[in-house]
Amino acid sequence: MKRILLLTTGGTIASRQGDQGLAPAIHSDEILRYLDHLGNGYQFAQRDLMDLDSSNIQPEEWRLIARTVYEHLADYDGIIITHGTDTMAYTASALSFMLQNLPKSVVFTGSQLPLEDPHTDALQNLYTAVSAVDEGICGVTVAFNRRIICGTRAVKVSTMGFDAFHSINAPPMAEIYADGMRVYRRSTHELDPTRPIQFDDTLESNVFLLKLIPGTRPEIFDALAAMDYKGIVLEAFGAGGLHYINRDLLDRLEMITGRGIPVVVCSQCLYERSDLSIYEVGQRLLAKGVIPGNDMTTEAAVTKLMWVLGQTRNREEIERYFRRSLAGESTV
Image 1: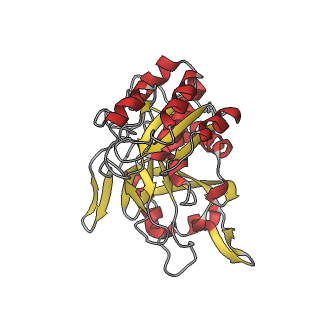
Image 2: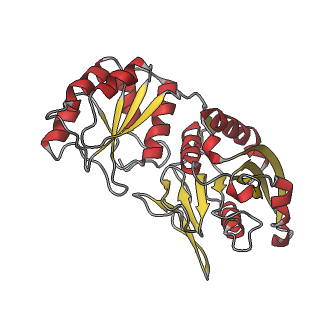
Image 3: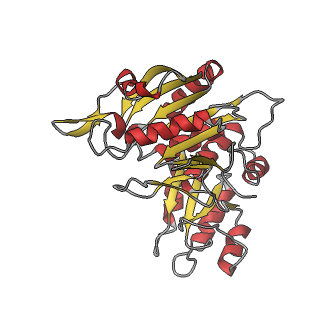
């Protein structure tokens, strides 16, 4: 018999219509009633952590979720976390760094329509999450639209479609077909069975994400430094470009990195990797001391930088962390 803990955080899956629109109102015991017919092969327990629209789930909530998982995982075969879809990729990615070397399933799921809606996708997504536990898929994952996606590779790409999450720059870990679940990888990371779970929820939340547009003013970096941001993720153009004629962003970036503020450069393109070695502008960027984000998603780059800055402020150590894949977030 599989023992599964259901943790709820709110989101669309748990929402009902109110005077001002949809808002979380369905609790974990009600959600479990929809899983009763799965039979005697499962023993479910439940706990309500919060009732929030996922727009309000921030680093403080990530820590609460991670600590709850860490404190209860030994008692269960897996943990399923229901969560709003809008920031689910950030939460799943953050937990992937805070909880490393996981030997069991920690599965995030949610839905595009509330559980009680006659057209809901919630039930299928819950069943997919249960299947991930059944198959023993290890690590933090996202279960959505009959797919299991590594938590650091999941990105929400649709506001209305049921195929809302894609696995970016890596194939899904598993998919459900008419003949059952096809498992391609059983762990998000390289497991070390000789070591325990590595739990560390220390985060530096003062990290800023800056998406460049043509004409971005260099003074934005002065403002970020004045606001005491400790790290920046820069979404550059294409494989890693930015302007330095008329408005010279390179000199300001040199100022930022010279102050010890790490800058991780990713691409605004959803698919494939950034590569700062291809073009002259990328080479100039590298010369200013930025850290390549390679093929990481924006969500993974942001949460990894938060977690890494929670471990160290040493420039060389930060770069070493970003040259390694800690939780399946990059191809190295």
